[in-house]
Amino acid sequence: FTTKKYAHIANLNLSENRLSNCDEEEVFIPNGISPNGDGVNDYFEIVIPYSKKTSSQIELIILDQTSRIVYHKKDYENDWDGTYLGNGSRLEQGTYFYQLIINNQENRSGWILIRY
Image 1 (cartoon, rainbow, N blue to C red):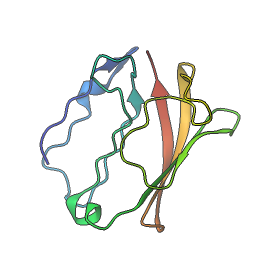
Image 2: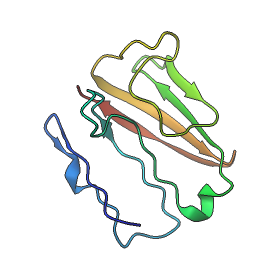
Image 3: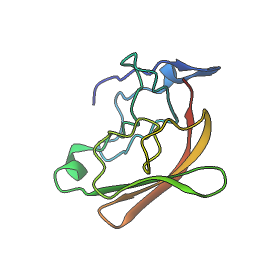
Image 4: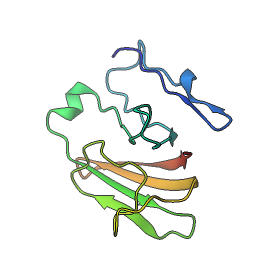
């Protein structure tokens, strides 16, 4: 892996989230996006190791704080930009929760912060 830097989002310093000398089997999931159109952190980009990527199917579910599904895609391609799946409108800034399913067997979950 190469080093990947992330911009500052609100008061969070995401530039410290770096990939270098990490385990080749490690999945990297960012904890924030800033989909403001500046080309930096505009998408929820999950880094899948090459060994898993060649045959992986990635399912992503994003929920709001009331557990309402705001985004769901079975073949996720790092293209979620903080918009509501139903109509493409921008979601409000704040904390959301994700569930990531890799190859129908490896489950990951956590939170993601959206700041514009």
